[in-house]
Image (cartoon, rainbow, N blue to C red; front, side, top):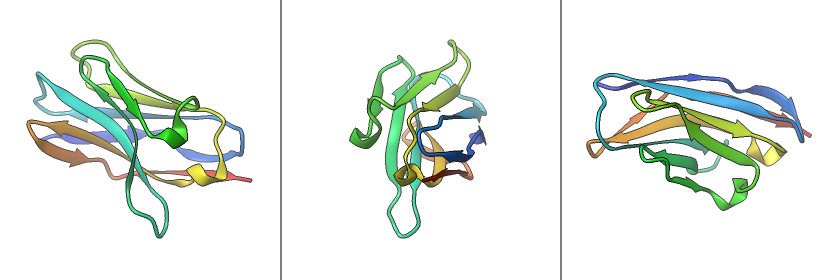
Length: 116
């Protein structure tokens, strides 16, 4: 079983920055993809950014140039999402995800609120 432990999030003014972190715990080895998704009230959950174990990254168009996803060193299944130039439309519940052995595991979510 895989568990995801999220940290970060909170309330910030428009233009500010926040950093989210997520640690995957459990027997994990080999190829995985970890990432962040978000869901705003009344909207569907959407991909924000993801990173493959080899370091390749993928971003939603709406966050390109503002958000950066990164991972800790080999053997450490920890990712970070640095969010800069935040906008009110970035307000959502952010979920950490890992896709491992063709299974998806989710964190409980952390709230990000950007005030205008």
